[in-house]
Structure formats: C-alpha cells, structure tokens
Picture 1: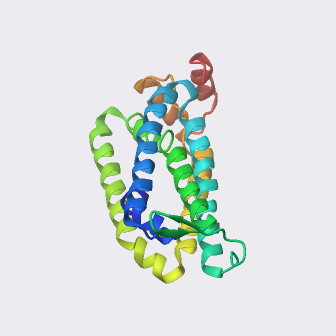
Picture 2 (picture 1 turned 45 degrees about the vertical axis):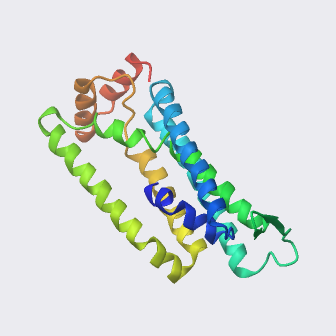
Picture 3 (picture 1 turned 90 degrees about the vertical axis):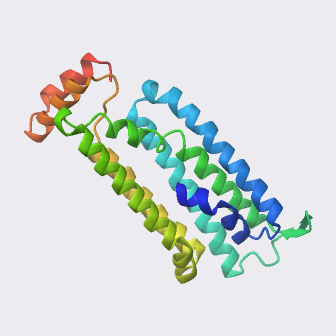
Length: 221
C-alpha cells in the first residue's frame, strides 16, 4: 500500500496524464480515499470479524490490481488505437485507458484501507503469547517495513524491466497468495480474549479442533 501511496503521482502519469497538477490532484483524491477507508475499517473490524473483512478487502484488491494491470497492458500494446477518446484537460491529452487505470488505483485504495490496512495489525497484536507479545510485535513490524523498503525501492526498476502492467500482475499474484493464506492459516479472533486466543492456537497446534469450535461458538464468531 505504501508503494502505491508513494508513487501514486508517478502511476497516474504512467497512465497518460502528463500534467503534474492533475497527477497531484488525483493522488490527493487517492490519499483521501485511504483516510476514509481506514475510518470505515475501524467501525467494521469488530462487526464483520477479522477474516471476513480481510478476505473482502483482498477480493477488491485483486480485482483492482487486475484492472490496473489490464489498463497498462492495453496502453503498452497499442490495442487502444482507434478506441481512445482524446480530451484536453489542464493542457494534457488523456485517453480512457488512463481513467481506467485511475479507477483501478482508487478501487485499490478503497478496498485495501478498510480491511488489509487495520486487520493485520489487529491480528498481530492478538495472536502472540503474553511472554512473546513484545518481541513478536517488534519482529513483525520490522519485517513489514523492510518489505516495504524493498518493494518501494524496486517498483520503478521492476516497472522498467517487465512493464507497469507486468508489475501490477505480480502484485496481483501476491494478493491471491495472501487470500489463500488467510483462508487456510489465519484464525478468527473476533470476540476472543488474549487467553482464549492463546488456548485456541495451542489446540490448533496440538491437533484438537473441538476446543476451538467451542470457543468460537461461545463468542458468537
């Protein structure tokens, strides 16, 4: 998400909007969507549950990244020739695939911010045993920001090597992998205390599922 936020003006310009002012304006709208989506996530996380919110969020992320990838592939392949409607806006000539890319970018932010924005941090604060909660949280934050650094530093190089469409296609693959990871690995912790989460994870590790089901049923999850 931070890579998209960092490079949103650049992505908008890659989509064909050459005006710096228009690119900045569209990126500000994207940032506003991120802020609004985070507020929605705060409201929804204890109502929908962590897993459902994350899976719904990732579904939107996958669709939006697919739109972004498709828009840039169409732009680079020249399939839009003869189909583009040219319009003059702030002195720049923009085709409809550019607006399609902006739509994908906005949908990505709107999908990511309510779910995959707050959910990982929330679950991360709930799943560690008390004795390891501090070091576990610190290690996960370190991995997060190191990964953010790697993706941010390689985005433009990757876009130059495989194309912007190919880069977003790779991101789509990562999002699909995250979707299945949540389905098969991430537990639902809605309504559970730290002790209940600890017990649930121990029972999962020891191969007992009955206790987990009882805990979830008792807490209405």
